[in-house]
Amino acid sequence: MAGTIIIPVKPFHEGKTRLASILTPEQRKRLSCDFFQHVLTLAKDRALNAEVLVVSRCQEALEMARKAGARSMIERGQGQNSALEQAMGRVNGSVLLLSSDLPFLITEDLAAMLALRETVDVGIATDKARAGTNALFLAQPRLIRPCFGPDSRALHEAEADRAGLRWTVVERIGLAHDVDRPEDLLFLNNRSC
Image (cartoon, rainbow, N blue to C red; front, side, top):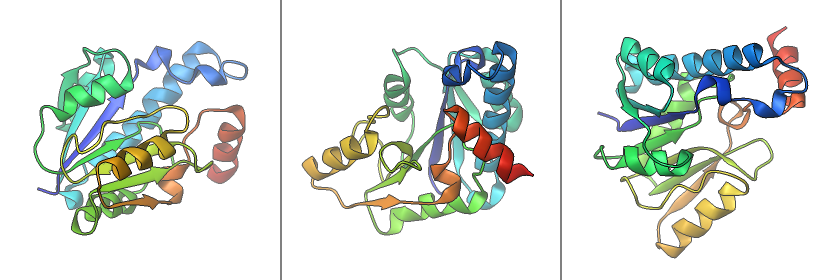
């Protein structure tokens, strides 16, 4: 087994709030659901040989996970980082903490992150602004605590340094391009044409 991919998922109706100026609540919900389905489908690719665990308060997301053959876990904590800590308590071996809204993600992006276990303890897949983190590889659960949110790249780097771990930053288009702002959606629409 190549490790476990953990995907935290907000309830679909709570997602993409920064797109409220251009999308209706139903459109934002559909977008969140579609992005998650894309990420889940790739994570379950047999070529990766990885276990997949979805953690969420969203019953629809948990049902989608079960139907795809992934493990599911009801989120009991306060926020994404707490949910990830909770999920890491249930796995052994390497973990890949993965954003659920990466429309350009390809299987090779996930394979590259999982292959990091051969060379580093921590792999930080940065966002397009090179400030955030869209995926975090850990050779073992809880080597560092997840610090997703504003400026998470620097926080993850500092955590790895404090722990004396070998780490690297990964820049891949499929891992960098999430959709949080109206201009991200425009980029997605232009790339899709």
